[in-house]
Image 1 (cartoon, one colour):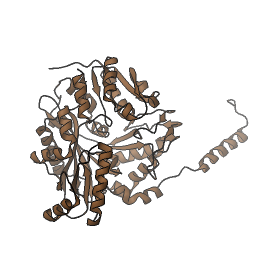
Image 2: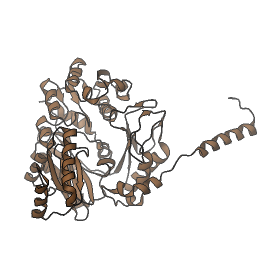
Image 3: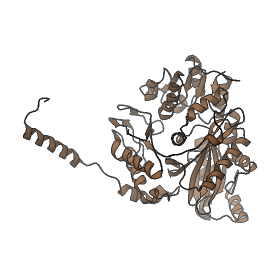
Amino acid sequence: MERKIGKVLIANRGVPAVRIMHTCRDRKIPTTAVYSTPDRLAHHVFMADTAVHIGEAPPVESYLNMDKMIDAALRSGSDAIHSGWGFLAENAEFAKKVIDAGLIWIGPSPEVIKMMGDKIRAKSLAQKAGVPTIPGIDNVKGSEQIIRWMKDEKIEFPIMIKASAGGGGKGMVKVENEGQIAQAFAQARSEAKKSFGDDTVLVEKYIERGRHIEVQIVGDEHGNVIHLFERECTLQRRNQKIIEEAPSPSLTDSLRQEICSTAVRLMREIGYTTAGTVEFIFDSSTKKFYFLEVNTRLQVEHGITELITGLDIVGIMIDVAVGKKLPFKQSDIRPNRWALECRLNAEDPKSFSPSFGTITRLQVPMGPNVRVASGVYEGADIPPYYDSLFMLLMTAGANRDDAIRVMDRSLGRNLRVEGIKTLAPLLLSIIRHPFFIAGEFSTRFIEEHMAELISMFREKNSEDEILKVARYVAEISALGTQKWM
């Protein structure tokens, strides 16, 4: 049965909110923005058709307040809610509240979100679907249990202790030897309790030279599940992605086929609908991949999949939410380009400490094969309360070299951001690094090469400005006073 969407409330801010609004504009669907007090002049607020104030700066009072979100939707005459990524995007309770309020939820069912949000349950479902998983134990109660498991299963260090309810790199501690186990176990539990209100932890073998590969899936309510190929998300800092690309340079065609069909098998098994991502860790030394988790939402890096396939994933989510069938078969999906994404965060590129303030100057890269997803404008503020991501810079090309070349132009020549510090110098150093160009990297690339990457930064110095002034003065003295002066 097809339903109808007359207006969408976007339960988010910044980059994801603006991204969803673009598709709604394409579809001639009006939108409602929500904003906290410091966001009253934010880009997403200006872009929406209506905007509702939902509280003060702390996310708990605004962007994480479920009742205020639903109230805002009903008050603004919205009949559907899309949550983007972050905040309430993978919250099963929120999805259920939206549906119970008689609104359309643009996302997977609350049952599926709940099922996949529990890492232990997700892992056992993956095993049931015949998907390889990393050797590990669940619901760990103490360090003796860990030592006994390592002995029985012949597991060698390093291992990773992580929060069962976790995500975003929180509640994860790497252990190098037996002496570290007790302290790491206590640390992981306390971080898990603080971040997620649940101190259940699991332990897994740590894949030393791991690479992160994720498969984009779309499914409808008619039983169709299709993959849109994979993305490589290996380059991370503090367990958070910073550069992604599609397709992955790590995979052969046969491995690509295998990993993508494995993802489809899992998502079919759990009855997945709308857009979602299956994350794998790939061990490049053994050429084996293992299931990590399912992201039951739109991913930050979905744009590079859109660039190589020509599809609009947010549009697909809206169609599925109203009960439509996917308009394509698996054989119709034929990517023929390479795409790269860099995440521009308002952070110091040397220390990753946040950089807040007003963007006094903003020149956005343009030109062939560039796509920018921005959450700001020149003169906008970057408030200290939320994620520091303010722009996604994507480039495409016929092959990987082309995509890197366009990214080099965009980051190195065409981007200017003043008033705040950004990760741009670091991103430029990475894409110019010979190992990155050769496609040889692991999740530890940044920590291993940090000093070298920083040494490659091109510092803008005052000499450039002095030369500019000198040239100007010389011109005036040579040519005399000009008409426009």
